[in-house]
Length: 72
Image: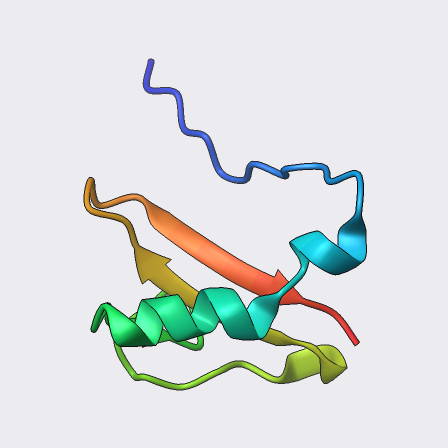
């Protein structure tokens, strides 16, 4: 039987300080890491704005798919 970890949520003490989408997204862009607006479009270089928030998907160096997400 194969086990799959689908989502991991990291709680934060200070949600405002921890939710600096622009700072983290800037690092992704500076490093030239391909990103995308959907899990199946991880290299379309677009931001998802669904629901009034912003999200992008990208792969870490080990090939894990990560999502950067903020809500309105």
